[in-house]
Amino acid sequence: MITVRGLRVLLGGTVIVDGLDLDVADGEWVTIIGPNGAGKSTALRAIGGLLPFHGDISLGGTALDRLPRRERARTVATVAQSPVVPPGMLVFDYVLLGRTPYVPALGRESASDLAAVDEALVALDLVDMRARRLDTLSGGERQRVFLARALAQGARTLLLDEPTSALDIGHQQEVLDLVDRLRGERGLTVLATMHDLSIAGEYADRMVLLDGGRVVAAGTAREVLTQELLAKHYRVRVKVIDGEQGPLVVPVR
Image (cartoon, rainbow, N blue to C red; front, side, top):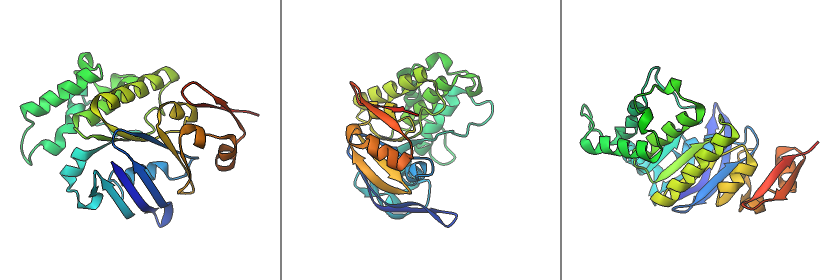
């Protein structure tokens, strides 16, 4: 469970997130949406312990600032929008980095660490790519590798920052279907940020709309993705069509 109360984040003296309250239940998928500059990624990074913040954040009932760094990494895994990958790194070695919180200082990875990596590679259908360099993979393949590292980390909470931003529509669906399947199989909790509103509404149990660093709407996709709310906060004309899994948002001239 993720509980956020009064989250405030400043970057360079500017308030980016201002008074965010958020609850994500165990096993739930919540997606944060909003226009560019709304504070989505900043909020996600703060919740993952990657930015200083004011307010209260707790993971599984424990305050974030009371979790030692290693314990925090075993609790929550963040998949960044564009992770930094060392040149020439192999898939297996990158996924193995997810086991860093379990390796003693000056120690080596154990048999259980290697087994966790193998399990993640199998789960994301990456076994045949384990010896490939990441820079030789397609965007969809790389995204699966980033998720594999997060799974190998053993965390029950996934923070996904724009997980499909660099993918075509086929790979977007493939990656999100995979996350949803793993959520069901492993009881994962997912908090994501996304730009594509129609796709976001297809997968999220609930959505939170940010604008100017504040929550301006929250609820199911059908409650949040309305023509009125989107026109007001995205400053765009759209048509919202009710789809089988959620609303379909179509820009109109």
